[in-house]
Image (tube, rainbow, N blue to C red; front, side, top):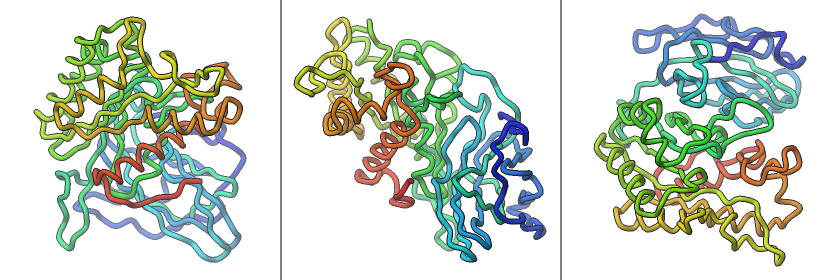
Length: 360
């Protein structure tokens, strides 16, 4: 995964001295600790897999700390701590190769974390392997086992490699509690056609689905010339492929494009993802979900309502209009807001347990 060096980081340093307590074995494997950190970067030489990370934040002074990792993934939201009152937080992270977009570079091996925030203070950190189990499984004593949420999508979902871009899947992990990892296999420029055809995409993702895993599918933005029958069949193929592995598919309608009418609404084909052939992607997605009893997150409806409520000016901050005159791709802020909408729907439909609820 991407190796963060001290020279490449901000001038902020850790607010407290890292604990030197000896690492303990975890299920026969060593626990990795703060000896793997320097300045505000931590690198852990671990193989691909899923890992639980537990941190103790805070110090002698008031602090505010957030943690990102791998390809700019938001893993722990900004967390304020009062002077002398440290807190413990945990999250679960997916380490894979390639570390970001499936068709992008591999990156460097291992798990990389960046300790940021307005006044970062990391007192201790522990990294242990998470052991995946089916949905609802628990360890002895009632502790939930780790499971994963896999994402199939395009550039509005993916782990974007550089500022100012961000996909909502890149921001989703910070909303989830320990035991839920996000394996983001979304890739820029993909349609339902190309995602199924490229061996680095669906043919790679499907074998990684475990029984009980959620697989969120949002593909539409690049199906500009896909006819309705093909688009419907492709969604059905993805749904059947998830179920074949014992996973649980969730269809997600695409985020709107920020394309206002004169009256301040988004009721037009460009905003609502109706392609050049007249195919209404959100409508087809809703239809497939209903026909095959698939949970649906109507992100088109949710983002339409939000963007219209903000209006033409305030909604610019959700997208990259100010930076790039881009009304399709989201800023970090917009991706974070949209990831929150996804998480709210997952919780409301009972697909994930309520856990971490506040970001920012």
